Length: 119
Image (tube, rainbow, N blue to C red; front, side, top):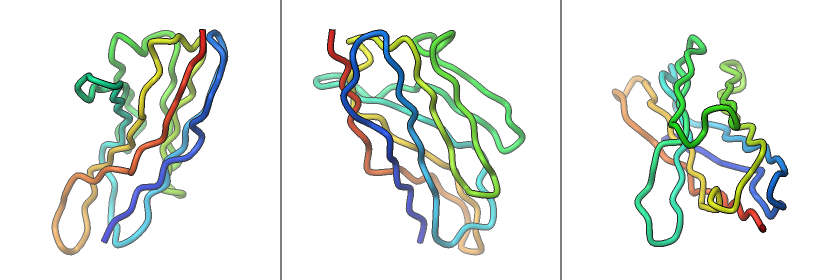
């Protein structure tokens, strides 16, 4: 099957930066859209940013001007550079990928990585 493994979360002070990574592995012919979502305690999961295989980026308003999404197709990895972090960015960040293989296509999620921003 397909696995997504996130890394790079942690504790950072407000105004600081973190870089998240998410590597895909398994039975993969092609990965179309990859993205990052987040879920804070007591809140619904929300979109942060997505990126197509061709590099087309899309950001939620919460991320514009502060976060940058990128990907390395050869490594099947997506990144999220987060700058100027705020306490309200504290959440579990999840990687998402739309994967195509010989079995068909489907959306996969990582297990999540905790980001905590202290004020």
